[in-house]
Length: 336
Image (cartoon, rainbow, N blue to C red; front, top):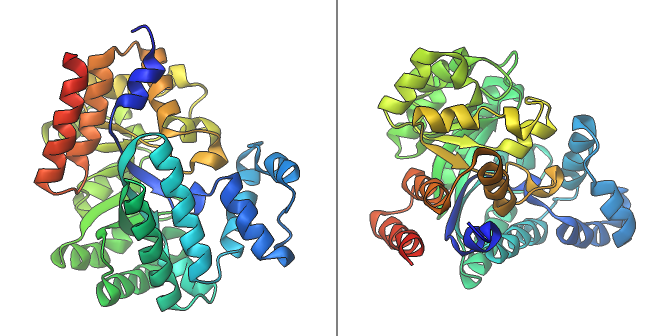
């Protein structure tokens, strides 16, 4: 492939694992910081850029919570969503399922209608930019069953346009998946898809629990599946997609290098791998960069890259017609 970057850009892409707060780039954070000068976040572009440079995981958390602290009303949420949409459009990403954690926003004192209006307004702007956005409302697992109960109640009570799935994020260690079973059962009964995180920082048993206890239709991360041949076989045979975020795993030191990332083994085993960014600006990546890193490291040709893009389309919760349109466009690129 003479120019993988051009081919990757031309692919109509889908993003399935990106956190709204973690999607905030320098331009977005600069706008928020100038709107909230008392936040302590730098309002000078050069200083903010230095603040944003990834140093280590504690620094990532500092930046993440600094952004979270500046989200107080619909205008801030709209700014966040619009910034994400512009970046997705720049990369030819046509559709994204964005993870939102309502419990954290409500706990911080944001009125529910402000959050929902900001999401709706940002989503409308994204459509104007050629990007369709859908929402995953997720539970911050470290806050326990109460967060699960409140997240479910909010999701089912408000049921905003574009809400397609119910997730579980936050730390995995010390946060058993099974304690959230009742909330996932009710969410699935109400028609929301199950997409919990599992197997990012813990072993295969967490993925098993996500599948068995939470009815996972996709697994967020899921990289430790390679440690259990029976689990990997189960995921392959049942076609359960994995939302793999290579640079995120590298930054959080779950892997030593891209070369040692389990994505190579997952691809070789025939797992349904999708590539994603998690918290892209904060980890110094983009979806195009994820495709390029995996292609370069594991020797993927255009057909292999197109297969990854197609995996994401099929693993998405887009309707059949929208999926067919994107798949046809991807197929055209590999036959030119």
